[in-house]
Length: 282
Image (cartoon, rainbow, N blue to C red):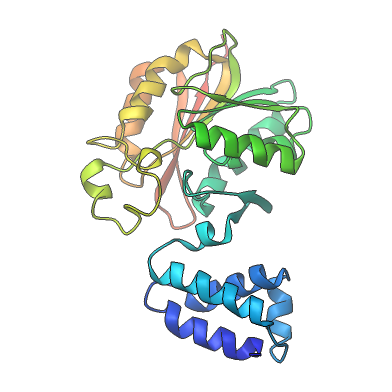
């Protein structure tokens, strides 16, 4: 049997060729296999793994070296303090998307009479489910064109205990309903096709969740064109964007919504990340 300290050292060396954070990835992987918190792994370096646990580590290590992203190896990933199960059919939740959630929560707390939301392109359901978990009377319709994504979002909503208030539907952007929504959120594919093909993520996560067309704006443009028929007067639209799309998405929004407060908000790195459209209440 091998000690935790030895396993961590070996993993750190082998993962250095495929990861920017081999030390952290090693700890997260080992914590997953041991079913322990990462802090426990760090404070028990002399503990030994069973032969079965070592075999699980070796199999996971092989998949990582072959290029499988860590969240897919684990089968789950954390977002906004919640644990989401994921498969290779859906996009891995990312910290950048928490900016959208934070802005949505701030607005919902200020507007207690606004309690019907739409999450377009829900993927794992991380946006819709997080909002519903934080706002106890919020109703969210979550859509995705991918059936595996819809199934995963339903499963996560059930696990996290918000399924009565999060309805997951397969749809091409907008749901089959005549309702107008107080809040529309979306993290749609926004990477330009040519750029995507040169990124490390290409081929590792579902292309349908990443490819935004020639300029990255195909689906964002389509959603904005339809949004006036779906957003309530005085409602809010929040769209995650690629860092180079601030000006172009702002111009698109100004064309569609001539009377709205339109802002581009930066992420923690100072890069354009969120298109915020506050509709004027007539």
